[in-house]
Amino acid sequence: MGGSSLLIGVALAIPDPWGSEIEGWRESFGDPQASSIPAHITLLPPTRISEADLPAIREHLTHAAAATMPFDVQLRGAGTFRPVSPVVFVSVSQGISGCEQLEARIRSDVLERDLDYPYHPHVTVAHDVPEAVLDQAFESLSGFTASFTATEFALYVHDDSGVWQVFERFPLAESHG
Image (tube, rainbow, N blue to C red; front, side):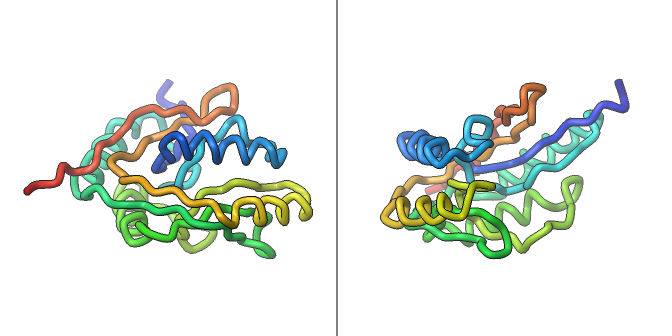
C-alpha cells in the first residue's frame, strides 16, 4: 500500500447561498465537471501525492492555516481566461492579497510545485463548453456579487467516482483583540 497515490487539491469553499448558486449556474451552462467540483477558489491545483506523505501535508496545512488571519472576500462580476483557456469565472474583487498569501504558504515545503499559469484567484463557472455558452456565462454573471469572510480552507481528495470531496478542513488563525 506504500505505493498508493491520491489526487488532492486545496481550496476556499464558497459558502452558501452563493456556493449553491454558482454550482447551479455552472450546471446550467452544461459544464461537464459541474456536479463533481464544488464552488471554490483554488489554493493548490490538483496535485498527485503519495498517500504516505499525507501526514506531513496535513501538518504543513495546519501551520499554513495557523499563520493566516481570516480575511474578507468579495466576488464581483465575470472574467475569462480566453483565448488562453476556455474558462469563464466569477472575479475576486476583494481578498486577492489574502488568497495570494495563503496560496504561497500552501504551495511551499512539502507541497511546493510549479504552476501551469500564474496564480489568479477566481471561481470557475464554465469550462470546456462551446464559445457561445462561454459568452452566455460571461453575460449572465456580469452582475454577480457575493461577500463572505474566509475563515477556513479545505483539503480535497478526488474520489473513485470522480468527485472532489472534503478530506479535512483547516481553520484560519483566530483574531486576537
